[in-house]
Amino acid sequence: MVSSFDIIKSLLRTEKSTVSYEPQNKYLFLVAKYANKIQIKQAVEEIYKVKVKDVNINISSGKIKRVRHQAGRTPDLKKAIVTLREGQKIEVA
Image 1 (spheres, rainbow, N blue to C red):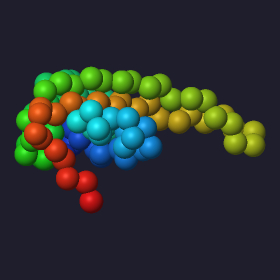
Image 2 (image 1 turned 90 degrees about the vertical axis):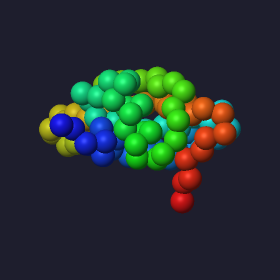
Image 3 (image 1 turned 90 degrees about the horizontal axis):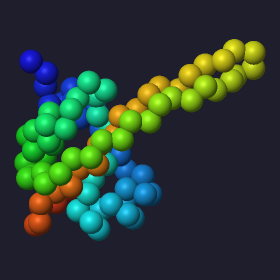
């Protein structure tokens, strides 16, 4: 069985997530590539002890980057925008 900590990798604290999402009671998470919306919802509720209203997923593919003579690739990322119910909040230190 997969742990909640395997599904939720980290809480992303970017300028966009702080300024745009948090006033709307939304939080941005970096999640595992295999995780679906139901697993993400259960993991956030278990880890942070909050009630989740909605989960939206964004998959961004990696880009090809060149360093000297070698071509490399940045990793693919899967992000989840989690909307919490009214009165719920995640305490961020």
